[in-house]
Length: 344
Length: 147
Image 1 (cartoon, rainbow over the protein chains, first blue to last red):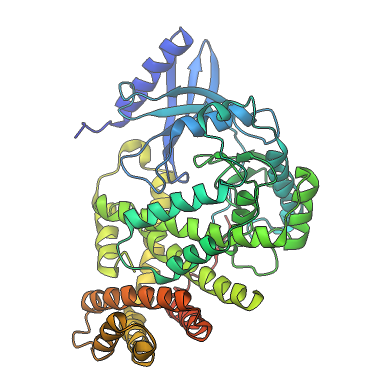
Image 2 (image 1 turned 30 degrees about the vertical axis):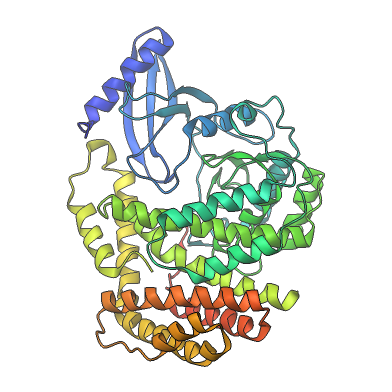
């Protein structure tokens, strides 16, 4: 077990690291851990260098997390989209080793003045819901339209065949559930079997998939403008319908039934995505990816429950996710299985 | 279902009693306290209805197994019949969950058998039961006001 880093230690280590990186003395101010980004420890701080203050975010691998992901992919996603199709913070540095801050981490520029909605708040966007929804689904469409070839993330992420995207993702998340399940889950198992019996059509194209594109994972300025798309830790290449299915999952609707993401009617959201992506959201294919995403959610919550136990029950976010959120997704899956049975 | 209420409440204690690192005192600690509060709120619901929910689910599964035992191959049918004859004597959450785990494993086997045999009626019956199970397990979180 490594010794804990205390406040001064972390700030001093950051200062030493950035001083080497920027070839000049750096002072760290106002280092503060912030909530959110459950798969990484997230800190905000100011770095003063050469009389200039730079607002930065540190994302460090935790001892245990909600999602076990590769920070190189997340960093490459920021590199891929900063200044392009999606508003994202500028990436600053990535360290895969443990010598600097005990665990791997990366740094990116901080976007001040933005706010992100909590996933279980009511009507978090108020009068700006429509404007934000239009941007939210337009940005997702543009991510889907982007050609991954040549993007930094393509160097790190395997490119699946168009007819194999679904199988790779389903195999992965079933494997997570197999590995981490602590109590039998007949509902999600039934969904997995149904998904295997009824595979979706091939992907229309291979796109960058954000992996966790949902309300709450973007920052807005409070005046109806999205200023940053965050939390790319599950980014990969695959079928762009995967992201659309996750974005419209009822779990992220802020307890609403008429507006996906608590922002727009479903049909409008899909139409915007189709317009911006140049792709079609075939209803049968989207239905497959919607059910898949509920399974993926259950994989994440199953993993969270396991991490909660393994970590000595000390991270309440993991406990909450493995309990309340898991039960919400069980309900979503059960309802969807009945609806699909009636449909077919 | 995991984690259990005792684990969550002990977890709440452990995460609050642990001295926070100075850089985690502000916004992060406020968020952590809010989540422990939500867990306490939901644990109250589970304390109120958790035993009843588990007793109901275990009884519903045993009733299903009693009906289906004769309609599936004998290996599975015998185990379904044996499980259907069981009962919950210990009404602690832990004991009910242990019994529930065994019943749920059998339910998965039964559903696979129904799908393999193309038994649509049994398939629909099980899907309907899934909805009831999920409904009864659902915890009600009052929508939090956006900040």
